[in-house]
Image (cartoon, rainbow, N blue to C red; front, side):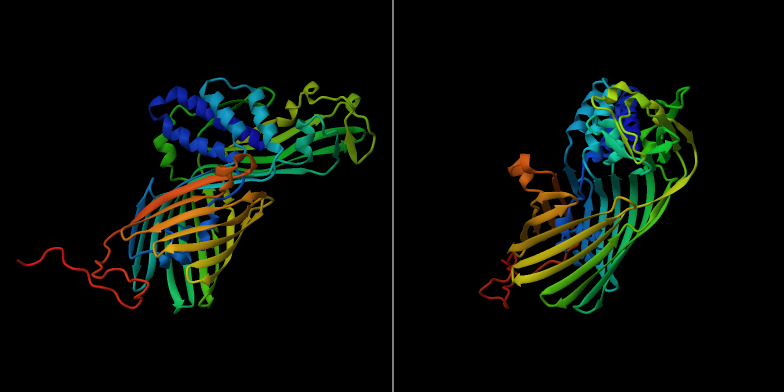
Length: 499
């Protein structure tokens, strides 16, 4: 299966790298651990911040929010934002532990794979801002950003995978293929955003142009099915897994994957600074005040693609396995049924995984994300916001929804909480705290408060935090206004006085 091969490749890379370059292994391990870690994550985080325009990273979700930034803002990694999210992480965590101990077997990989196919869609988009600069001018608001991105989407659950791995799955439909779509990406993004108020106090639009530099890619359109020819039933796997990653793949005489290793000239610097896989993308967004208390927001992010031209390994499956007649209990032309008591351990399915490898360039479209939100000011210090997010990707699209309330404790301090459905995770209570001072902004957010209070009930867990600085701010000569004097501000006294 494509994900089984990807897991094998990632684990072998980590293991070989530990042996060959110990001095710089930490950076490499972090990158590949994030990718492997993403195999067991099922949501994109930070949905709660879509309703908070002045949060300095919210313009990643809607470029129209750039106008809400301070006159000049600045943030840099790691203070610019760290995002951690996970669910069902135990199999991958156990696998990483065994790899680091130098004790990995085929049964270990099979255990991880079998655990994954019991679940549905996996989706994770991990974003790490490296640099964020914002500036407001009379011509509009600008924002420059450098960001590291790692994401994965895949669906493994289906009749064909269950038939291969689960002994209790006795039957499978004939001539009904199961797709194994998957996409894994690691790329660096350079982008320039621009936003401007088009209709005063009514309509604001934003645009962000992006330049991508790909580091790693895996794209799969593999499918498996049972085909009946004459009186024989054959299990077949077809199509391709396109991979761009610095590695050498070796096949055994039976055209099965035998060895995955790093090239002799591999270095972390070359991997991280790879600029040969170039792509372009676009974000667009808008906000519209229907009434002074009701605001509509909408955006589309990552409309683009990356062209992969180096470190290419295109794996084509042509596996074909004739199912033994002695294990078939049904002669139905449309259904293949195993005999009672049949165990998958008695059959060697390795012939299904025959592959050939070539170096052909290819392109991948990034998953496009659509947002729509309504925000209503119920009271002067309390807003209610509904956000819908749709991630569009062939055979792997899914939808998420959140309903949150935002309470302004003070002018510079707000909290937000509510309820969210993230993919097919239904037990989620997001919670965030945002503090905006005169020289900096801090935020702390968890995607599911239940994971901290009652971990056993949480399908998804996550935490995000970060800060930015406001530079070259104008000196305020007046104190903050008081609630009992809303239209009066007392002037500050000079700290030094004439003798």
